[in-house]
Length: 342
Image (cartoon, rainbow, N blue to C red; front, top):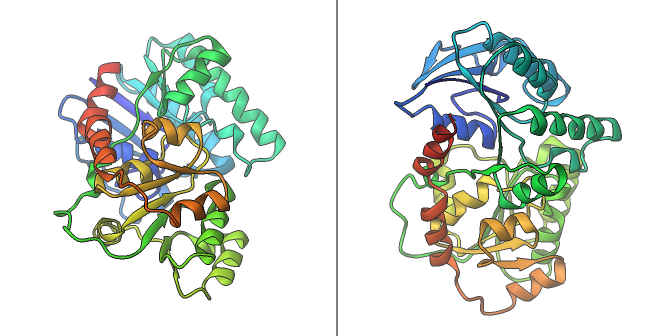
């Protein structure tokens, strides 16, 4: 099989969930992949990586430039031999009807986590993303969602079936898990309001429990203000972003619990990674997180509910989370599910 992958910054992975997905898809020996990459994201531009040939474009893969970046990638892929297309996200979906009109290529689109609903977008951007989502659903041969709640949305909104394929998380286990835990909770996310960062920090500021919180605090005024406000609390440690898997493993493997505040975006990679660590998991109460954890985690909607959980003797759900992760969230499972689509 021969497949072009469109819609990411590139590989080796250096950005987010889709990049981690592609990083693990290209381990396959069954499929030849062509991966489109953002040129200025890589000082050294390798031509090949694992089982993939890399193509570079002088545009940004995120923000407003993601639209021409994805469209250019899609049309360039049509100049190659009969490779099918795996499109990650809907930024370039306006090109999909043209692809289907002029070629016989199979198009599989992962529509991401209902991006148009996110508060960070203005009205025009939300309209365009919703419009693009509709085009992707209508004209793609197969629609992929990463969460059953999004699959249900596609059926209700467009009367079309989607295939649910989540992410793997087993790559986060880089060593043997320690037997003993340390006395702290961990949170890890991009510092954005929709990840309920302030609820988590506020709750711990009123608690004696220790929290280590990893995030990109200096990337926004929102993050800088929170960092300034909560750094003074002795039980809260504000930690700048960590991308090294070994360093993350040390923090993840030793925490006594993980607090996950994401409220948007479907199945979140950091959650499924953490489910492999056999530790207690507390999630913000939304349909995506409940589906990902099969309603077996602990859940909160506000500061008081989180404080109540912290102040109680929580039943440890770590072994249940691990069982779910091994059954649903390994890269071998995910890779086979994607390859079956082609």
